[in-house]
View 1 (tube, rainbow, N blue to C red):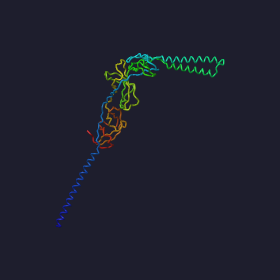
View 2: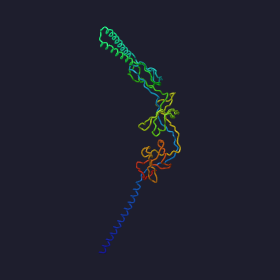
View 3: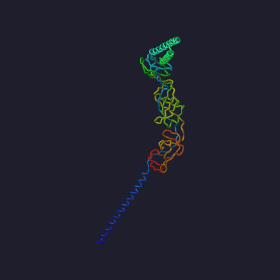
View 4: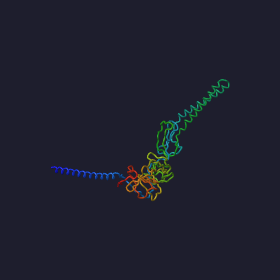
Length: 351
């Protein structure tokens, strides 16, 4: 009986040892698998591109809208009733040409009244000066009479200046684009009568990206293709904005001759900027840069890890940037996923 108990105990111990060995073996396997998974999870997934050598075309295009060379509202210099308008919409006018006339009746009355007051003041002064010689008026009364003459003369000059010219004249040469008033209407000083535009030449206004604006200069010749006629005409850059707008684009104006008036203000056109291209230019995608392009930092994949490098760059070609030093053709640069990278991070390249 005692022998059976010993055998039972030995058997139970054997089972326990065997069970322990099995659990220990499973634990070791699990730890090994977890270590493999942990190693895999340390890799950051990225997308890449190769540094390439290519021939870069210097041509790029920008769309814009034609604006008139000059545009002006012709206004009345004085208030009054419009008695006649001598032009219609579409009429051609010259600088200095009379385009409308205001009634001068009220103005003439004001001038005549001021002249009458001046004459009366001067007559009174003459009488006072004669009376002063005989003691008929005092020196104070004489001074007051002289002051009244000065005031009346100033009022008369003011009335003359206010009267101005009842003729309304165009300040520029061009074509009447819009008529704002009609005959018989009463207008105040400064009220626009007509709008005149000059389209003997046009300004094509475009917005050039910050990456390209450094490649254009005032005086450069640009090919312009109107969207309607599709003919190619020559224009010259007449203005480049010194500051960009909110979209980081720079307004540029291109002057185009339009002697026959075939092209109209408001039409769309494409500006074709031509520049000599470059051969064998090393380039990388713009999105490869960490931060801004000006920081000149990128990640290069070497032996399965991302190496942070600082390079030297040249011309920006929009979505590509020239590399002048720091990279060789065929190098692999990270273009997506940089936010998760630090120097020497293991990477997994997505296909």
